[in-house]
Each structure stands twice: as C-alpha cells, then as structure tokens.
Image (cartoon, rainbow, N blue to C red; front, side, top):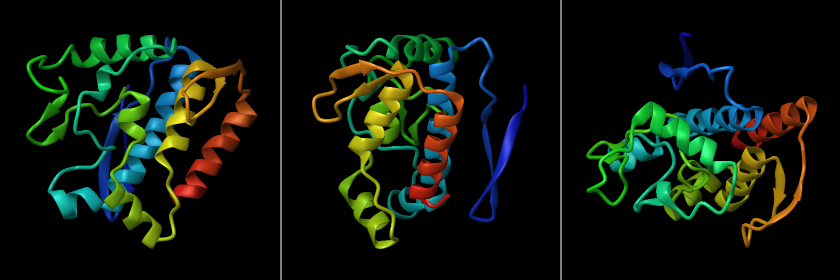
Length: 179
C-alpha cells in the first residue's frame, strides 16, 4: 500500500495509506469522509496561522473516549488501537501531544467534525457554512448505516447507503467545503 500525495495550498501533503480492503464498507466510507475533512482543514491553514499547529479537527478534552452508545464506533476504536495503540493514558486525551493530535486517521466522529467557534466564523467569512453538528451526524450515520437525529444522537432507523448515494454525499461535502 502506498500513500497519496495531494496538493494543498501549493504544497504536497502526504496522506494516510489507502484503506485496507478488510474493513467493513461503513468504516471504509467513514475514513473516506474523514480524509476529505482532513484535506479541507489542512488546506485552510487557519490553525497553523492562528495557533501554530496542524489542524485536523479540534480537541481540548478526551473526546476520543466519549460514551460508546453507537455500535459502528467499536470497529473504528479497534482499528485506531491496532494502528496507534492506546496512547498516553496519563493525558486528558491519550492521543494529544505538544504538537496536537497524533491521529492521522481513525478519529471519532466528534474529533474530526468539531471545530471551534473562531474557526467557524473564519470559514463563514470565506463563504463556507460549516456546521460541525451536521457533519458529526453525517459521520455517525455513515459509520452505522443508519439515520440519526443530530440533536439527541439517537438512531432513527437503519439505512443502507448504496454506492451512488455515497458518491453524491461525497460530492455534496466537497462542494459545501469548496474543495
């Protein structure tokens, strides 16, 4: 397996290795959307310019260990631990470091979707209306093949997304993020 180089702001960023074929389809799709968000956050340069760190979603607490009431998260958790280990359990988040998050992939839906209010305002000024709650819900829905209520986090119904629908979801996400 080899890494992809994707141009970002005139530079080439080394992207994570391709998704192993042994993963479930929901997790593979989740990781595709996570990669799109990673590319988007990196391309803005907002966190690097304002906080001196690479942006890949925000974190100021241990949200990687948020309550696991959603079934699809267990495969994500297992793969994260397989790739990155359990992390440093003495920190508020076992995957945080002085340079930011050490996870390049396999972040929880909240880890990758959430951005701070300042970043949200900066995006709006650029004409990008990013709603982290909607993105969080989309990621949970993809990961669990179900429709969720974004407010309560409750599963509404099981829903299998076909390949055509998933392609449309990716297209709409790219369009909304202007990538």
